[in-house]
Amino acid sequence: MLGAALYDRILGRKANETLRHLCIRTAIFGFLFHLLLCLLYQLGLIDFSVQTSGLFDSYLDALYTPFSIFLAYEVYELIRTIPDSFTNSIGKQFEIITLLVVRDILKRLSDIDASVTSTVDDSITILAVECLAFLILFGTALFFGTAQRETSLITNDSEGLEKFILQKKQLAILLLLVYILTAIYSLSTWTYNVFDGDGSTNRTIFFLDFFTVLIMADILILLVSHHYITEFAHLARNTGFILSTVILRVAIASPGMSGAILFILAGCLGSAVLLSGFVFSKKEQQKFAEME
Image 1 (spheres, rainbow, N blue to C red):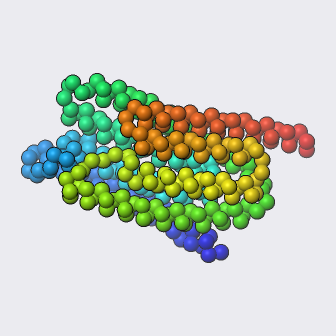
Image 2: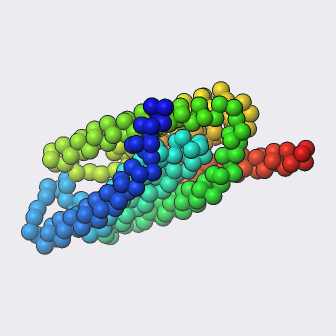
Image 3: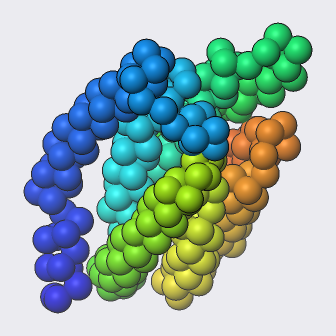
């Protein structure tokens, strides 16, 4: 089919391997180039405006570039996982948010390094909560990674599974197009602001818009899946997953302490829903085994 063939060409294993190697090379080059700019700025050989100097006033700022490149690749990986299972997709979303929080922590560390003593205490408090959020998000991502095979068993025996997978592949292709357009818009807008003297960086750039679209895609998948799978446990589990991603989206838009707390809440909710669904699926498997 056309959708499946196009998916394999642009989102298949070969395309993924090519993009992964390109991402690694670009991340290394971006890191070294950013590090060079930081060195030249520290030596006073180049100068930037007050608004953009925050990108180069600490060597830790150089870490922002490779992490941004890896995040871009992880979004591509997320789109690839959409046809696999809903659990895989949600797990990838938590992986992306985990890297996003790490990037924020590294950026905050570079700001603390360049700040005055009187502002360090408040920054460290937020930093500590963000580190806690990272640990919970990281644990949640690992939990999804280890449990995805068991939870995917819920849909393996459903009628019309091949048609459902094809529909998700078509959605993934559409989402890839949205991803490219959103990335181009976000990058061009940020570049224009840099040349205009505003070099501020935050996690709302690209990710706020993309996660909004992603939530709509998750809801669409949930509605379509209910056509093939009518069990309440499946519907409630996936609805809980969507609720956790909505909280993630709100957390992206929330600065400082409130955002970190929302990240923690989303991680705890996602893990709790996954655990509940996993326990239920185990009981169902035992019930069927006893009947045979």
